[in-house]
Image (cartoon, rainbow, N blue to C red; front, side, top):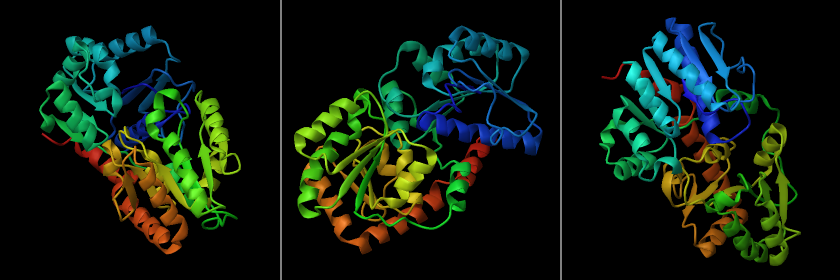
Length: 362
């Protein structure tokens, strides 16, 4: 397995890769398979032992050294392997080099924005030569196929799921939902200038209307990034300093508390490859409001687990937030539906079943 990272704190791709490692570990335990994981960017010296339990699964991080990563990948291919799992389309040129010296089956994983455009020649060729392409969402699957002239049937779907260790920690936590003193609108995201498509600005603008209808409502932003200063200034300019809380980067325990305390989760993104935070919020039985765009449509069932809104429609966004803050019965019903939806489609056992099933597919 050639991965950009898995065990260093980061985003959805790293969480997805931990699921892949856990599935491969299961193959090693159940079938006696031998596997090797090379991680380009992890800072950890060793893998988290909760994910790697089999002595037949080895893990090595190259701490960002691309020459070392490439060298070890090629050396492993020369020694002989049956499958090479390429964990990002950016590793396409390396996949082609391995293809030149090994007849191993190649699986290539695609996620979101990186695969939505026409790719450079080497990456496009790697896609075309892969034995199996796995996509995190149907949206990414179709856009990548169309942009790169690939038969869409060659790309299979393997949606993200909740990390079973994350799930177990939440299930074992005492008590139910915390009761806040005021209704809380929650967003969890990186605050990066390159990710303004997530829609934090739109939520801030919507909160002007929300505050008029629900004066004690609070908006809590969990996450950090270099765009924080601009957003903090915007809050001051809008006169929302008493309404908006920048929680910054928080611990797992603090994040758990915010999820439990919030009334509604909001992220009106227009470019989500999937949106792991939506299923996290759903697992907490919280209604979610997301952008009516891209992969978010595959996670949120409009009118059943939450609402989809156009990224640019601030008035509708405000209306949906206000409605859920004022109607606790509707918020509770959507939240319960969201939990059931996550349990049906987005838990680890289903992810692992689908992943292992690809080994026996023709």
